[in-house]
Image (cartoon, rainbow, N blue to C red):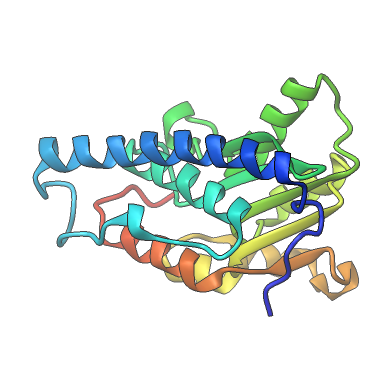
Length: 208
């Protein structure tokens, strides 16, 4: 069952969130429209679904999905977007930039952590929650723990990541069981994130 944060009830925070989401979704929609017009299907194995129609139940997961859309439409990397929230407010966001930066460590969660730390001018994200479109790989999971992120909400599972060509599960097997983390990792909005993964799977892409 999806779990939602209790820190998002303040009406002023809703207003701030609405403006932020509108800006993110307009930018993502514009990128998708431009690519559709320029590429006219050349970059897709078959016509992809309109990714901007993907709707998550959780508002912060929606921002993570929009981040991922921005990344995959620009060829930055896999369909992994992340957002970091403190006291109901977005303090950082990012998406996978492995291909864009030629950096195998530049996953969505790491990008979001770097952004949040820069914005807050701290290395300590105590009191923050992270929302990501895919369950964190071992590197990103430990990055969240090193950053003192309070909780991680993810969409697609490690097994889902493997279905679109990523090696997270193989590396995860080296780490051991995640059950010891208790409720630190919480799955939510999997169906919406699976739609994102399906759109990505229909694109010509670099597997890494």
